[in-house]
Length: 405
Image 1 (cartoon, rainbow, N blue to C red):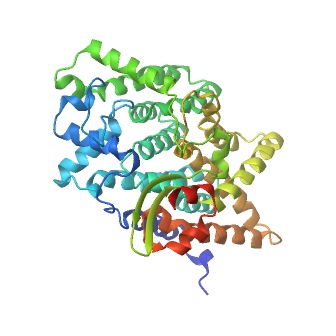
Image 2 (cartoon, rainbow, N blue to C red):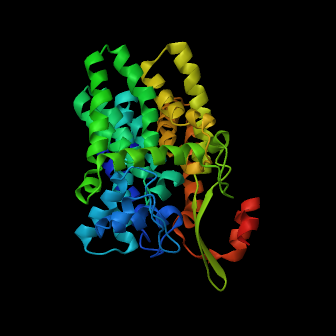
């Protein structure tokens, strides 16, 4: 039998990253049409590529079936546009490919953060492995939306900050902020860290550099003829949109439900004669549920041991989750995406502790096996693999399945 303890950690890491890349690239071109909010993000990326002013302007009426995406900063859409330009095609795989690359990079960043915060290569590998099997970020990395971009930038920023590369960290945080406003919750991690280390000058850097990067991300906006007053008005329109959005959606969910993975978001369906192909943005239930327990155990350890490194992990988890409890707008499970890397780090830490205990080693192995099996079971529902209708009906014995059938 293969003994993983005899394999060099770097080879295990390479295997994890290769598997992450393969699974994210598999059927990336299907469907070759917009999925869920790609009708906003990917469509607008194409408008950016075509140098159409309308893609930046909130007052325009879009073509039927799509919409101009001006409610978020432009960087993620600009990256998708660059990908389509470089690959000389506007097929779905070309605007989804950068997300895949960011998704694989995020797995690697979880590993590096594990090395830094957990002081254990084994725990870091476990954290990266379980995160690579997270269905939520998996789907976001295969979809032309902006979530995987800001999640990856935030992880990179935290790593740079922990390595005391403060200026680069501030620049990368500016990239995160230029992808999605929700990145601002990361200040709840960064400010305490900088204050504790008495890095007051670099605290100022985090106040100055990210807004500059954010402003620069709108360079095409100005190059095609818009002015500063229109930029200011656009920011106001974005704020009003997110603070006054009263719309309802059948797949929205309350913030408290996200760690339990109760409300996956239905992105796509394709009906065959005897099969159905679905895409759901869904977490790996075994990962989420065991991860919640790991977070609770980690809270206990922080209280007892006063571990700064574990506290950083908890700050990451709660900073990107709890602020949504006071959000006035409708919310979806994918808003939980940036908390999952930190949940995975907590789980990697706790599983490694179990593996080091002869009495509890079997429990850790059982949890890892359940995470793998859960991912295998939900994989067709993450990638639109056609499966028999009867299996889908059995698998989804929930109100959500009644909406499908």
